[in-house]
Length: 535
Image (cartoon, rainbow, N blue to C red):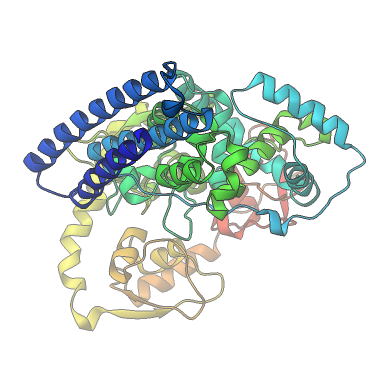
């Protein structure tokens, strides 16, 4: 009888929660009233659970009122699951959360891989140590073994690149994880989510290092505009991920379940708990989770193991592009483009894009109530500060010229249709016609710098045909190469003009461009031979 009454009570609570889900997008006063009502229901539910649990623990008066252990566990499991549903609804009233699905390898695509360097017994021992050292259930099973060995056999080379990126991002992650009292090992979750690519975008629209969907990002103050996507801001997105994980852990009280909920949503995890009869160990509910999530936690465990035992498997990090401690930020006081900064500070566009991935159009906007910043290598920070007034004056001159000449270029007679040829890039075309890259993008609705051969571009040129011809002539009379000895450097995968220049003393990026007739960093290809003069 008690169980029957209890089920009726839960059905009532479910109807309340269903009504609440249908009214998430009500006006604020109504949402507030419903939230207060829900809080009352949650409090009542907690009291009811406690009262029923106490009653079930009381000794039976007669054989007719005996309650079995199975009955007690059944009621308790249903009550806990209902409470989790209610707690999550409370989080939804603060702001709705949505799923972020990231594809990982599922069991059906794994094969039995044999590695001499990693016998099963050794793997079991290492996983046992990880299980003891972390708050996760890193338990050995054949599926996890096959996944780890598959990664080591097929993706071993990729981990060197990941470790290189990690040198920049992990110090940032660890600082935020420690601030929110979250296990530091969760930094490896970003590898599973995005392979440490801040501009990564999934097939369903999840974006950034931590793969936030649009609405989830809004929940945690990650705003998106035409110029800026804060889901791609490494620092802001990391703090948002910490807040999200904290909220999930507060609900489930278990880090494995919190990670599963981060991937597929807390509703799916709670349904899996129900279907598993109230069991809460991840491995016991795994079969009831969506396919992506069933493979998500093992992918995290496998990544955790490989990164912890990289030395044991001969995995060596590639040289870091740059370390975070070698950079600093500066708040801007006027709208700037990466192109303007590159011209003034002699810094690679690639470097600016790597350090500032949140700026979608390579433009840093300026708003009075917003603090937009530029992250630069330390050696450029000094340049920026020392020449800040000159930089902004340079920008003013460019903008003044643009404003004066724009009206005459909108006339149809002055419009040019340019066909993109092999070797063309936006900077080259802009220079040919005496316009800026940002203008080319605006005239043609371009969101990136990518061009296709044969693509037609609309251009409103500032240079006449004669001036264009004179430009070509001036290019042909380029600087003579220095005399004397030189060495030859072979470009490797991952190289940039900046990283190459740092390998030689007294060699600048401009030197490399002049000595090797390089007009764009896009010309740089692995295997290319570069001349490096000694004087």
